[in-house]
Length: 180
Image (cartoon, rainbow, N blue to C red):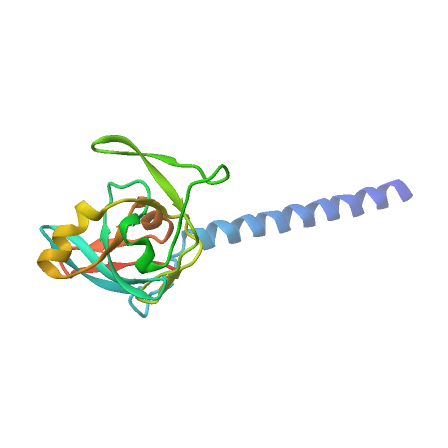
């Protein structure tokens, strides 16, 4: 008699656990199939305007508080700062045993880039404080921008930064949107 009562209680407990588990699974499946509201459903995602120079997208930003222009290059694997402008923008390259050079591959082959002291990059409402920028001397490369348009190239925003902040380039409206 006692055995039958204990057996019924265990069966009820199992039945209750199975029911709860099924309800939980149905809840998960139901919520994953329902439309998800976008974070920016009622507003546009943050964005910054850009202009082009010879088909190259350029955004205006601040690097360590000073106005700079950055080339947006989806083909660049790393974001680079213009070493030739290091003094103006207030950053230092690091070339010691702890911070050695980094190999970077581009269309011209493999070259080296230096590590950079921490910098603050601001564009739109986005502030980038902890990105591991690299640096290369871009004086010759950036000279036409200075001579033709009077703009100072701070560097190149590569796919590392674009991927992290989900940058999307809208060539039709000349804006770059991002997620914080």
